Length: 213
Image (cartoon, rainbow, N blue to C red; front, side, top):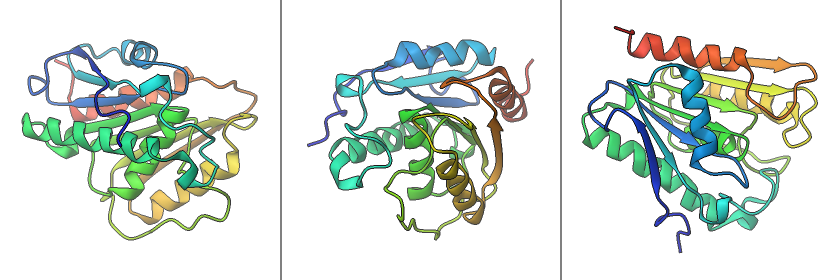
């Protein structure tokens, strides 16, 4: 059973295949596509394609991303499958993987990080806004495969009650070992949100992938 397979995907911007970059946006727990598409407006690139899938019941997986992974099934595998399917759709529409960007916030950020580790390749970029790889303390993630220089961003508060800073650092180190070009920023006292500095990183990335006309 894949609970998220029949959920809708909200699109914004150019039709898929009509723009040089496709951005997959994964929303957080108890949220939906409209919430994460607020980020797209802040990127200031309405000429690009944005794909925002919805989670069944507004939650991708039921427990903390620090819980035993089996306890978050089948939602976890279904959510990762949604990302894989959207990457495949973008490629089929003529957008190469190295022009596909994956970004998420909170629960969606954890999915973006986990997807990168499980499906290492050269992507346009991956932004992990307040999240990290999934699994309980002591999890050993595979460090085989090659992210091949994919730009990756990890940003989080040092006092985020949902996301321990240690897991963010662990995730950034893992992706560095996998060959990603990692930027990690810790924001003292920030709440559970995406700040302007984090948005600026994405704006720079998108300008590199598709220079504004």
